[in-house]
Structures are given as structure tokens and as C-alpha cells.
Figure 1 (spheres, rainbow, N blue to C red):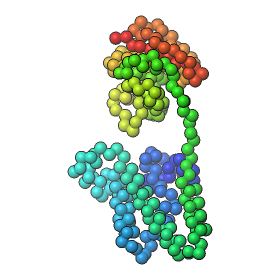
Figure 2: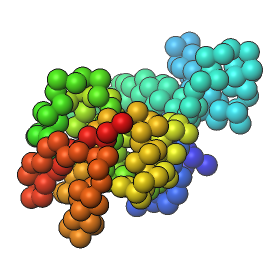
Figure 3: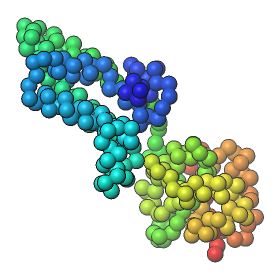
Amino acid sequence: RDYLKPHFRSLVYGAWSKDGKPERQLFPSVMPVALAATALWPPLSVARIGYLVALVVAVDGSFGMNGAYYPLLYSYLAPYRGIRVPARFSIFVGLTLAVLAGYGTARILQRWPQRHLMLTAALLGLIIVEAMPRMPLARVWRNPPTIYASISGEPSAVLAEFPIQPPPEAYYFDARYLYFSTFHWHPIVNGNAGVFPRSYRELIVRARDFPSDSAVEYLRTRRVDYVAVHGAFYDRATYDRIVMALGARRDIQQVAVAPWEGAESRLYRIRR
């Protein structure tokens, strides 16, 4: 059924994308399938038969543990136990369809050689329209807050970034902290990836009421040296409350404050 689900970013078919994770929205569009079917219409060459076999193998591999041979690979070949999304075998499905679509296009052009230019333009136009994405872009800051310059001489200092969002927003929200890290290159306890370890989920739960005593103590156990607090990501009342609470703690020292994105960011050092 996943091969009938269009990707949610498809401009043409995205409106029919109702459920499922993007990794399992595998609808390959109409044109590649139609052209591949044209290529596989008899008579068949050895090469096209080979690509048909490759297509079947790739589709079955994308079924993962529901397929014919992937359970055997999983049982006897250790590397296959580390594949997180077997559905990505669909990449090979797409590659094989692309080759077969080329064979199908060649067959069509050979059938009507006098209309070569018109048919080429029509096929390309349909393929391009089908492939157009619906992809709104978000503005990315050219520079992060300047507070990180205060610890440029401590390359091993560990940072915790706030605010921390609860799941599922946290999985995408923390990508901005990864972006900041490409400027300062300090280790951070926030992060964004396809796999979220127990320590990350624990961080979200234990530090969500920062700067409470329990949250600060938990950050100490994670060997966090500095905490960055970004007013641009808080509402003003919440940010003011957190800053006031941090100012009242004797075990946390303010290191830097700087304006950023119409608000301010602050850097604090956690005393041991």
C-alpha cells in the first residue's frame, strides 16, 4: 500500500497524501511506471529482462521483514541488522524505473520517428511537472548568537541549549542548535537525528522545567559546562521568568549576553 501513497511534498499528488511516514510514501509517479511498462512490452531484450528482475528484487527488498529475502539477510548477515528503514530499498526501485523509462522512451521515439521533437518535449514536460516539489523554504540565520565567542578558548566545553521542546517538536526544533554548532563546534547535548537515544529522551523529560534544582543537577550529571538561553525562541514572559530564576541561583554564573533576532541570548556557566 505504501507504493500508492504519494510523498507529501509532491506538488501534483501531495493532496492525496493522507498518512504514513515520508519514508514510506513511495508512490513513484505515473510517468516512470507508464514508460517502464512500455519498455517491458514484448518483445523483450536480455537487458530489459535483467532490469525487470532488478526491479522485482528492489521492490521485495523495500518490503523489509514482510518481503521474501530480507528476513534471510537480516538473520545471517550482520550489516543488515543495522538498516533502520528497509523501505529505502525503494531508491533502487526508482533507479531501475528510470532506466526502464529510458528504454520505454526510446521505443516510443522509434515508433514515431517523424514526431521525435514533439514527443520528446511532451514526455519531458509531463515528467518535469510530476517531479515538481511543494517545498516551502525557511529563512536560516547567517550567524548564530555571538555569546558562543565567550568560550572559544574551551573547545571541549559541553553546551545545553534552551528552550528544549517536547516531542515530537523537539526532533525538528533541535536542528537549529546543530546549525549553531557548525559555528562554535562545541559538544552539545541537544541534537537531531533519525535515531534518538535514551539519553536524549531523558534530557527532554528531566530538563523541561529548567532552571529547577532537579534540572540543573541533571545537567551536571551530563557534564554540561554551559547553558545557552535564547529569548528569540521563547515568549517574553517565559524568557524573563527563566532569566530571573537563573539570576537568583548562586551555582550558575552569567557569562555573556548579546542581542539576537530582536531579542537576546544569554550564556551561563554551571558551577561544579
